[in-house]
Amino acid sequence: MAVGKYISYNLDSIVTVNFGSGFVIRNYQVKYQVDELITDNLGRPAYRIIRYIRKTVSNPWQPDATFMAVNTGTSLEFVENNLRFIKLKFPVRNGYAWKGNSFIDTQSGNSELIYLDNWDYEYDSVGVRTTIGTFNLERTLIVKQQDELIGDPADPLQYSEKNYAVEKYAEGIGMVYHNFFHSEFQPARNGMAAHFKDGSYGIILTMIDHN
Image (tube, rainbow, N blue to C red; front, side, top):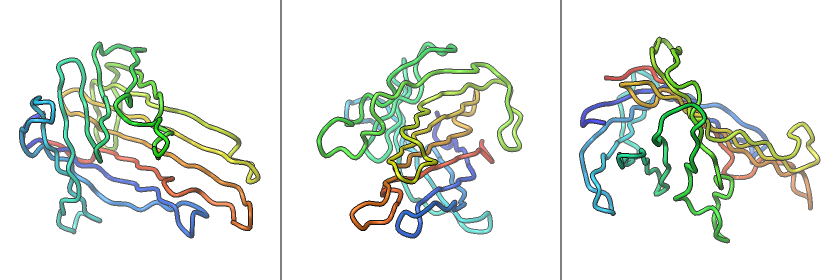
């Protein structure tokens, strides 16, 4: 975490099409760059991170989102769309788990984020060498966030839901891989065709550059 540091990724954006009848993958490149040291609403030192996006390498980078990261001394909090995630937490060892979404409102009656409720983030493969894209990374770790399946996705006559999330980090670099997918399938009823509900989507980030 230092002003000017960045990581660029290939982004596979998985979105619904044709009124939720299926999914399509759209490809982009994004760059997360540490912009400035700031103070969060609790008075703590924090870093503002700007995300830039482009369709291909021949297109110019365009800013499209702003995030915030806070190193609390015992954890790393990441704020995205006003949602605070606890991405990393001490002690860093295989099997250590924590409630990574505990700051997010998943319980109130109007919450659209029930699927994020009670996730146990857990470290795996700490210190293991791995390959991400074209990079051979000496020391990495995996944060398993969720792997949940409700119902039978192969049965079009019943409701089903998938929730999957995992991230990989490399020592001295940061997050090098992110895979998230959430879908809710609603079978045909009351004259409405079977469809994946609004809010079903996925994101895969794979590092392609860093400084």
